[in-house]
Length: 232
Image 1 (cartoon, one colour):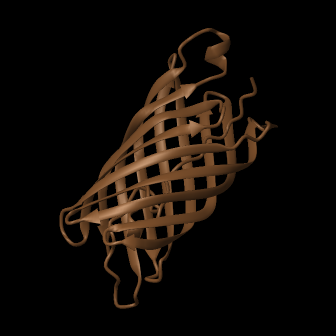
Image 2: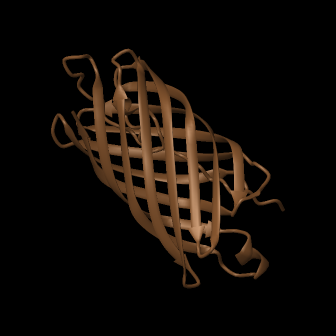
């Protein structure tokens, strides 16, 4: 079974329209609708603690061992809404874990341009395109890849509560292990986010993301992010 390396995605902060809900933060996780400033723009910035479980699927499979390991780290997401349905949303995530006493560090970056359309009061749909990059390091082994991102989702607002559900698909353009090219394989992830507006500008958010398609070397079984988001 072929194993490729990239497992980009995703966005709570995945990345959905933030001013629309962070769709996973690009709307990536679901960002509450931000009030526009005097220029008609809606910038936001969020910071979250991340924890979850990854799975190494190649070496441990050959050794007939369990390849799952816990990870923890930090996620920073932000974006800018333009007041016409369009927004730019991005996310950076760094997590660390260890498998059989070998430290593994993973970094992920994604940026998308999203468009949101209100369907009815409190409910809207959105979609976007962008770019993603992923890198894993373990001892002397480095796994990296990048690709174009497509996402689609929905979000809601009701009183102080808001949330989003987004699917993100990575059209992988490159994948390699320590400089050795691998066959590219597309990857898909699903992310759900809920939030609560503490004040008009500050919100608490919780998102959960899982990889749902793609046969990759390191897979994201699930990742949860708990944090705060500030609308300027």
